[in-house]
View (cartoon, rainbow, N blue to C red):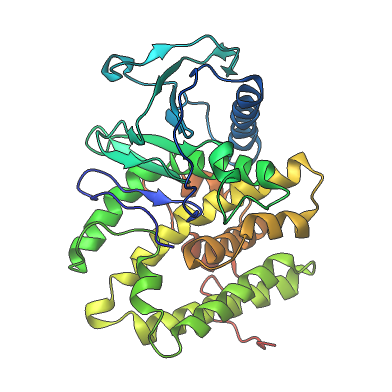
Length: 357
């Protein structure tokens, strides 16, 4: 399944979980939120506030514009400019965020959803974060749980509601640093002479058929996870050094000449998807009843997409070695997680000799 993309000239759309189509049919209904729907949204908002405060350690900020939809209705949560929502009506809810009420505007749809960016998308199972206002503001668009339950890919997941709470937090994590990372990505894409739009799987799409690349990426990924799970600090540093050495070797082999810009493009998307996956993981563990292994299984899902799975391993490891990484990665000029990892090694370069076993 391919992620949805919209021209990068207008926004960068970061597909979070590459969901399958739902195939749900639209039907007439009231667009008031049902009690279960309202409870799910409130729990998601509370989860974001928890992750934002306790794990990402980010300052409070107003909610971004959130667009939620099911087979028949669209709900605009905390819309920045509700005047542009032709036909939408303010509905009464008890939703709160940061001790204040949350504005919700609802309207029926005919099978498509008009986004704050003015792009129209078909009703489908999806979760994505994107830019509008010329790349200066972010919004989240996500299908409601009912559409996911109706999908062939996700409907049989007994832990779907918890999974989707993680999806929601994953996407809201993107809203806090997508603007500066998108600026960097645009420059890199131009340097690499890549046709816009690009998405979070651009490296996977470009290099997966290159001999040895997929195996090298998977070996490196497994080393990040192994290092993050290693309880002995000395061995963890050795494994971290080995993972970074593997990365340098892979970059030297594949990201040279005309492909050199892919090194930084990869870092941008591993940062975006890694922080999103790490946020989902932390929420899942914090709420229970999942232990670390069960939470990883839920969040990693099918492990098919490098930007998400490798990114999660990188940030699990980073969190063990650089306790204050959040302020650096979510800065106005986001730091590379790999630069932070390299600096955390004893010699500051990651070149120490280790055994890779």
